[in-house]
Length: 430
Image (cartoon, rainbow, N blue to C red):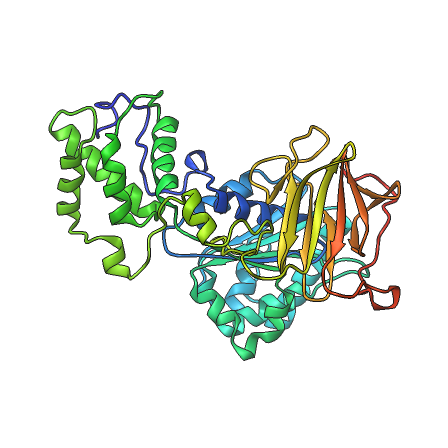
């Protein structure tokens, strides 16, 4: 098609979910971090939602490609299934022929297989894409599978990905038991205006642009207005625009090429056809008007002002060599700490893993958890896996320290601590 005309190695805006082209916006990076953390939790259960075309499937493909060999994955993409068909689909991926088994036999076979894999040192992850289509009966089977456990651990980690209707389905009173088992829900929003431009440039670079300007600077705002930052729509419009430019033998896509593509696609502006408010670039002025930086992640891709005027439940101070580097408010949700900018709190140090640990905040407690980091987290020279924080606790991460300050009004007393007390590791995590 037009790839040769623009001197590209391949088409940059294909609709197939190719991990090579994944653009990690802040929200995409955070969703990926949450999926990765699921693997290392004994009871990992995460729900990722997003509108059609927001990049969920590409994100899942990338996540699965990067999993270590000791993780056994079963993935369900076809979700218009009965409960029996769902269980059969799981066993088929494990090499079992289950088509003449009754439900009791299916469940027993699955239970035995999972416990066998656990004993062999394998972690098991179930990924269900388009999970909003699962029936209530199938979701109940998912709940039962999430309950398979040994004396210490849950055997199966679960990731449900789907459109926003999935959250409404999980909130139904009939599924309350399943909803209570979900550790985290994360909504993946569309890209902002700046992210949309960066997304287009990124895909062109992957395809071989080598820094060449292929879209004129004044085209990006028009593309954003008509796509709303939805990656799949951006791909469709950019692909059609490049085809229009190549037909006129222009090696840079101009406004008239984008307008011609919009006419061919018969699109109206995204906001007018969806009623969605577009995410315009944030300036320092309107950032302050919105209430400033809340500090902690809220578990929402929209960064919905976790700070603002809401009183934090607790705070952590990041300290190095006796100096306070930063302060972060803790609100209900989780704060992921690690070396890369994709984390809620970045510690740029070679002693810190990419996703090192997290602090989970609820109305009653804040719990810090190691995310299978290389160098671990320590309290009083003892390596810990999971710890319910008390006012004044100091947690060591490499050459940095986290000082925990409880803001709930009354300090936690030993008798009031939740049952998730410190677990000292006898062996270092890999």
